[in-house]
Image (tube, rainbow, N blue to C red; front, side, top):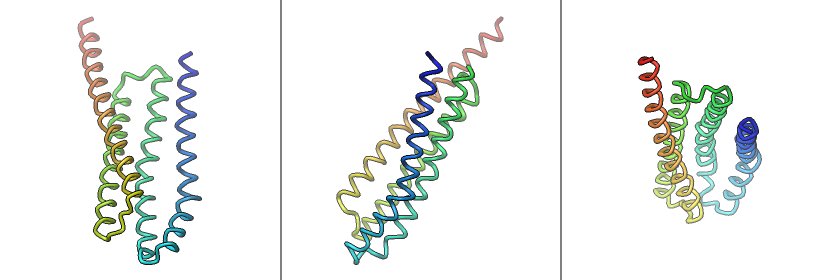
Length: 158
């Protein structure tokens, strides 16, 4: 049963990655071009915004890779290890990087008077989601570190 759950989670991670990759390749350029045509006064922001979104995709895909590594550790009965702690920490840093990038991007758009309310809502949703993931990964990382300390103490007493 455990293998089925891990396989499902791996498929979900791959699915999310493929969907976001397709959005980056197909949808974002089209949407950026369409937005520039509809709002010529903001056409100069088309490529900076597109590049900013692509930059935020880098830590996202790195976090997905770390999630796959973590699932591999769990699958190999190596969940309680320093490798898992490191993977959780890297996912946490990726989430914080995404949060920071979105805040900076929204500030830059606001300064240009180009922060449309719809874009702001999407930006805030991504920001708060990243913050929740960051805090959740921090809690799990601390919990796993405590488990490793207890495990080491038990190994030393035997």
